[in-house]
Length: 278
Image 1 (cartoon, rainbow, N blue to C red):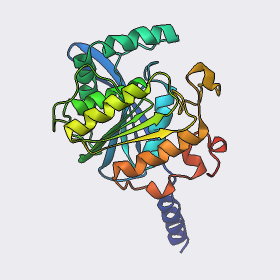
Image 2 (image 1 turned 180 degrees about the vertical axis):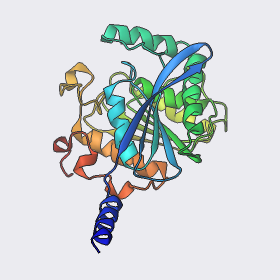
Image 3 (image 1 turned 180 degrees about the horizontal axis):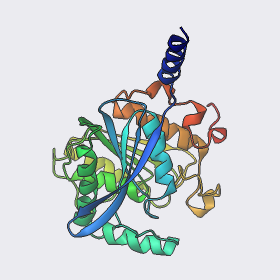
Image 4 (image 1 turned 60 degrees about the vertical axis):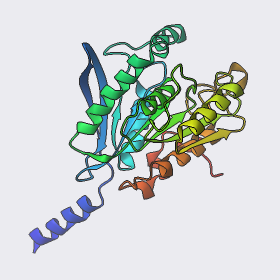
C-alpha cells in the first residue's frame, strides 16, 4: 500500500511539472565560417512542436536573445537563436556593433545565406515540426528575417521587431512565401516614414500577406530592456509597446503551441513588474 502511495505521489508531481527549458550551444557552418547558435526547448513537453528562429540585434547573440528564446520555449516552441556574425564575434561597443552590422547590410546575399544556414539547423532539429516554422528578429535581426522572407524561404511567417525595412533588392512578385508582420516604433528615427511607405508598396506589389503595426510613442529598440527610457536619444525601452508587440506576435504565428495558455504567467516573463495590465 505504501508503494502505491508513493507511486501516485510521483505521478501527481510529474504530471504538474513546470516548464524545464534546456539550452544547448550549437556549432554550425555557413560556407567555411563557423557559427555558434543557441538551442532552447522545454524538456517537459514530448514530441515535435512548432519552431521559431530568433535573430539577434546588432550586438550579436547574447543574454537578451537567450531570454527571448526561453520565453518562447516556455510557450511550447522549439527555438534556435541564430549567430549571424560568427563564433566568438560579439561586439562590445555600439561602434563595433555598427561596423559588424554594416558588413551584412551592405552584402544582403551574405546576410540571407547566414539566416538560411540557421534556419536549416532549426528545420533539421529532432523536435521541430518542419511544417510549422517561423522567424523573429530584433533591430538588425528584424532586417534579417525580412531578408530571409525576401529570399523565398519556406517558412510560415516572419516577425520584425523595430527592424530596418529597406532593401537594395526588393522582392520579386510572389517570391515571399511567408506571412510578414512588422512591429514598428511610430517615432523611430532610424526608420523614417518614407522607408515605411516604400516597404508597404513593396509588399503590395509582391502580393504578400503582410501587416504593419506602429506603436505610438515608441522609438527604436522599444523591446530592449536595457535601452533606457529617454526617447530623445532615438532608442529607448517602451514597456507598453514591448508587451503589445509580444502579444501581437504569438497569434500571428498561428501555431497553437502546447503552453500558449500560460503566455502571461508571471514566471514566463522577464520583467513582469514592467508589464502592467492595459
